[in-house]
Length: 70
Image (cartoon, rainbow, N blue to C red; front, side, top):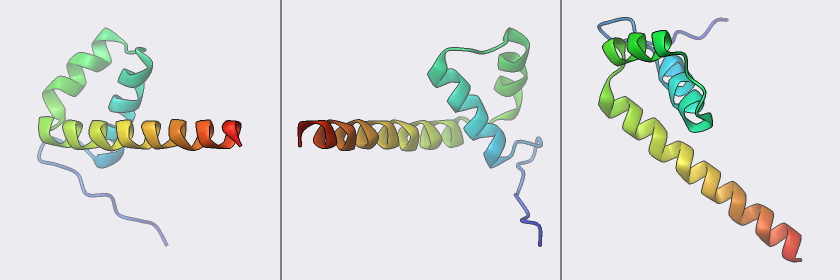
């Protein structure tokens, strides 16, 4: 069984948005990929994925600190 991932009007998928945000978190982006993503990705989707990514990162840090302190 294969999962169907919906794409937006310009071919932007959820996984492409997650990939773009993840690379942006690391600060590693090719200029050509950045320009391509700017034309394809929905800014609202980018914001949602970025907020979720930050929440996961902060949550992981809190769990790590609690684990180390014990």
